[in-house]
Each structure stands twice: as C-alpha cells, then as structure tokens.
Length: 356
Image 1 (cartoon, one colour):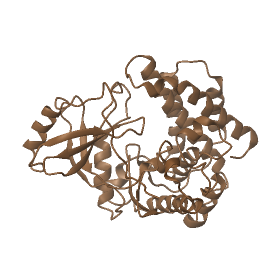
Image 2 (tube, rainbow, N blue to C red):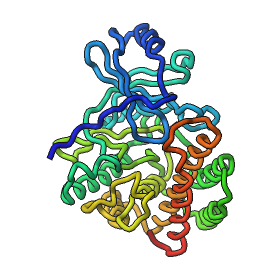
Image 3 (cartoon, rainbow, N blue to C red):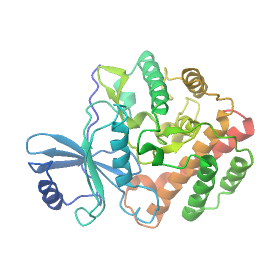
Image 4 (cartoon, rainbow, N blue to C red):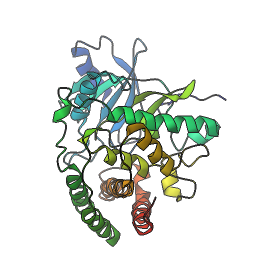
C-alpha cells in the first residue's frame, strides 16, 4: 500500500495571491533570502485559506490568510491571533505544531493579513482521499486512539504559561459560546429553521457547571492532523489553531465528537470526516477513552456534543450566507443548505433520544 503525502492543488479561481507583491515583502524581511517561485493551494477546509509556497532553493512553506468575503465577520478568521497562538504553544514545549515563521499585518501586500509557517510533510486523512488508501481497520483504530490521546495531552498544557492565560476568559465560557453562536446564526440566517431556536433554548436551559479551564483547539478532527506516513498512529502536527482559546475542555471534546461520523450517519456527516470507516472508535468509545485517559467526568457529554453540532451548523450557515450574497465564488458552498438542515436535525434527534 502506498499513501502519498497531502498535496496542494491549483489555486481556486478568485483566490489568487499577487506573487510579485508577496515576494517584494518577503525579500525585505530578514528571513527569506530567495523568492517564492511556485504557489499552490491546499484544497481542504472552509475557513482560512492555506497556500503552499516553494522558494528558489526548493524550501517549502505554508501561507495562511482569511477567506475572501469574510472581512465583516468580527472575531473570526484572525490569522494574526492564530500566529501568536502558535508562538505561545511553541514556548510550552508542545511540539506537535508547525513552526511559525513570519506574520504580516499590512493588507496592501496581498489584500489581507497573513502569516507563514513551516510545512510539515505527512499524511492528512481527508474524507475525500482516505478511502482510496485502503486503510485497514487496525490502522484506523490506532489513528483514532492516537487522536484522542493527543487531545488529552493538548488539554494538559499548562495554561499558566505566559500569554496562554490571556487567550480567553474561562469564567462563563460555555454561556458566552452558546449565546454568541446563536447571535452569529441570526446574523447569517438565510432560511427559516425553527430547530435552531429550539436547540438554543435547550442549550440555555440545561447548561452544566463548567470544568476547570484548559487550552482548547476548537476544531480538532482528522483533517487538522498531519500523520507520519510510516505510522498513522504517530501525529506529527496539529493544524488550524484559529479558534484556539482557554475554556472548558469538554467543549473541545464535544466539538470533536460532533465531527465524528459513524456508519449509520447521513451522507453529509460522512462527507467531511472518515471516522465512519471500519476500525475507528465509535463516539461512545471516544468519550470513554478520553474520560479514562484524562480523568474527567464525561457523564454529561451529550450536552457538549449537541453544542458542537449546533456550532458547526452556524459555521456552515455563515459560509453559505457568504456564497448566497455573492461574496465568494467557491462552488462547494452552494450546496451547504443541505448540511445546515442535516446537522441541526442530528442535534435535535440527539436531544430527543438523550444519547449520541
């Protein structure tokens, strides 16, 4: 079996970057001595855009910038904050991150702020490409267990490390998240979907006491992990730290579980994660392993799982609203109304059943 590393693709129409302007900026820095001669784009993700750069001396880097048309979304897509998060995590000794190299706040260079980090070579298991790799159930079990264990390690990072304790306000975090994401939904709403109001009411009425805060990633899933091609249970780096903050770690677990599709889930859920393939742990096994390895009580994990689905629905709604207003031309976004309906219905069903 041969598995190729995650490969960039041609840049999508409307998302091109002015290479002449970028090189002008980079060559004025103390870091880049030779120009970028090739640029491509990583195809995954719906949020910040990720580009592959190769310089004249064959060095490879990754550039991150906000999506086109997202300038009006306050608090989201803050690549300057994401860069700073990577710098702070680097200082803790947690090594499973790409090394941040350079940031630029001058929007005149490429039309938005951006930062550049090292490229970590490895495998990213995306729902679109993983089935063709012929992965065995044993391999996927090992990878899914590693994913959970790595999340436990991430939640064990000392948030007293200078800077990390300023990333968020852990007191009242869950309430702010529930209220904030519902406000974002209302601001981006395009269709009548009463279930979102019903879910918001349930989340407000059944809100649990908060757990001791930790660093949380907030977008933790397979396609944000770079894996060792020779051992898919070896995680080399965690990507996409744009939503990282300090708060209740079970909110992070709930978000991860909300991405965790199983074989009997609908086509939309299975389309953006490969956890439904044989060998992966189930959602309940995920929760059980995390509880065992972390020592945390997950008896109320359903609440956090439902919130994760609720939040994901809002994120997709925001993307769909940008497409509907013509602020992005990415053809993938036109069909997201189906996903909005699917995830919100899944959350409502979980509430009704009282389980995953």
